[in-house]
Amino acid sequence: MVKAADKIRLEPIEHIYWLGNRLIPGYSEICRELGVTKPNPFHTPEGREEGVSLHLWLGFLARGKTPAGPPDPRIAGRVKGIEKFLSDTGFKIVGGETPQYDPLLNYAVTPDLWGHIGNWSWVIEAKRGAKLPGHRLQTIAQLIALGANGFRAQKRGCLYLSDNSYRLVEHTDKNDRVNWAAIVEGYHAMSADQRALFAQGGLDARDPAVLGMRPGKTWNKIVSADNARSAYK
Image 1 (cartoon, rainbow, N blue to C red):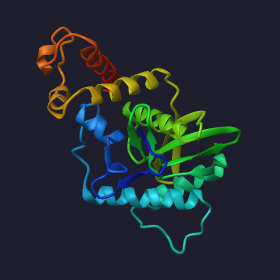
Image 2 (image 1 turned 45 degrees about the horizontal axis):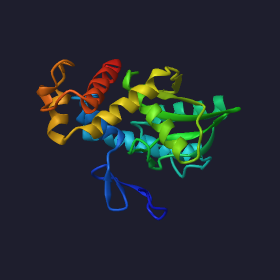
Image 3 (image 1 turned 30 degrees about the vertical axis):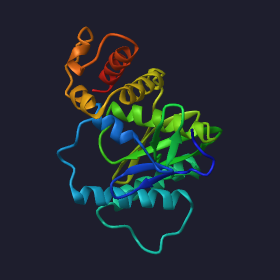
Image 4 (image 1 turned 60 degrees about the vertical axis):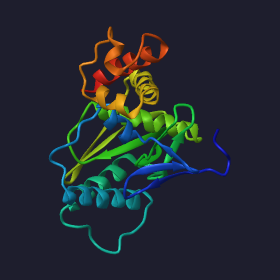
């Protein structure tokens, strides 16, 4: 049970969520451990540093703050993309980069931005790279967790930043909500060892013994999680 004094918090170095003295699985951890997403072999420390800097600029500019100096040349073009997005859409920020916890499904996530474009409330995830199916799953996880904490996002999508430009792609697939719930429930139904086997793929719905299980409700959750993750390959 969540106590009123407990507040979800993120340990930024290891990217671990805590609620009081309890570890809470985060979006990235759940997807990684269940093989929903695969590690990107092209990620580098330099790329991660650029990503952190870009997100800081995103929050800074969305809040209407005036920078003291220019951005790092490596991200300057994408910062121009942020400025163009804010100018074109009139986005009004409500919050961003604050951990959110959903007590019903028992997971945490940190959305980049949430606020309003015109009369619509949005949750928006910023990306530097290409469009991927898993991005839809990320924004529905954010939307659900925000809703549990009082912000009802009517729309969700990814802001794809490029040099001096952007694309805001709305996510509208209604199956994402059901799929995310199935994935999280499957995560909680398995031990760490079972998740490792599950992540390898090739699950046979007729053979629960592969995970050391028997037919029944728990196994059905695992099969549902397997079906759900297949939508994001």
